Amino acid sequence: MAVATLSGALAPAATASGGQGGPPGRDPALQRELAGLVGAPGGPPGAIAVLTRDGERQVYAAGTAELGTRRVPRPDDHMRIASVAKAFSGAVALSLVDRHRIGLDDTIGQRLPQLPSDWHGVTLRQLLNHTSGLPDYSGSEAFLEIIREDPRHRFDSRRLLDFVADEGLLFPPGSRYAYSNSDNIAVALMAEQATGQRYEQLLRELVYRPLGLRSTSLPQGYRLPVPYLHGYVVRPPDPPEDVSEAISASGAWASGGIVSTPRDLTAFIRGYAGPELLSPPTRRQQQRFVPGGASEPAGPGANDAGLGIFRYTTRCGVVLGHTGNTAGYTQFAAATPDGRRSVTVSVSSQVTGDPELLARLRAAEEHFVCALLRRDR
Image (cartoon, rainbow, N blue to C red):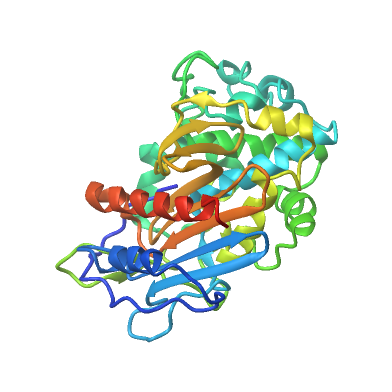
């Protein structure tokens, strides 16, 4: 989720360095791919990719975790995962579906009658696959003005939809696909209404604990736990600007506020894309895809939208996952449907403003997916 465009600029990316933490036999071509991304004009200062196959982990790292140091990005570095947080809200909602606490066809009118009456026919399913038609609060001029004046402003996360409460739906629910940050705010509010528990507690009980996530959290403020992968605004020829702690997570909340690590993100996506977290009937609903529905930014290959998850059909095969971007970070996390193989790619700048660099990132992601799916593994 791109909460705001901050002032600041990029300089030439840091020199690439070798990966750490993986077993012997890492693919030199993948290391060159990641180093080339960091070394590209306007490239991110740092990048880390983690490939996991049947419990064997390979780590590829390039550049630096913090400019001015020689520290390479590591699997235990904290980072903002941006809209990959939407997969977490999907995991909460679908876990509650499994427990018969909420239904996919439950409507906003049934669960959140205080929201605008024009929205009342929207279902949980439509929120999760971005066919709801809800206007995007993060594009509201009133919201953006607050961010511009004070990027660290502490929002009441449960009132974010107030920014668009005077707007009707953009289209009839279910009639088409449109990615909206409002959708996952509404998902979290419906989960709270169904359980009487705060969303943060539901994350701990339904996602973090079952999947063994020890370094993942949903903060309200702007601070990051240490150590962390520093995120930068890169606009050559100016020097990179460190924006790691420039923006409060409260303005993104369930739509993009989660902080995690490459290690935890790997465990999460294996559980959520695979069979570990959800029952077979609920997984079948999760994987009813809207053709052409792309995540933001688009992931590798052709994109289709499921419930809190996307299908990426690459030249080498299919993986399921999510992407995300915010000031200082761009993320990709995906796994095979059996949960046995996964890949995460995290870079320390928001590359979406540079079409050429984004195309290069998507190509790199596809190369990593192809390495993940190789039949000889």
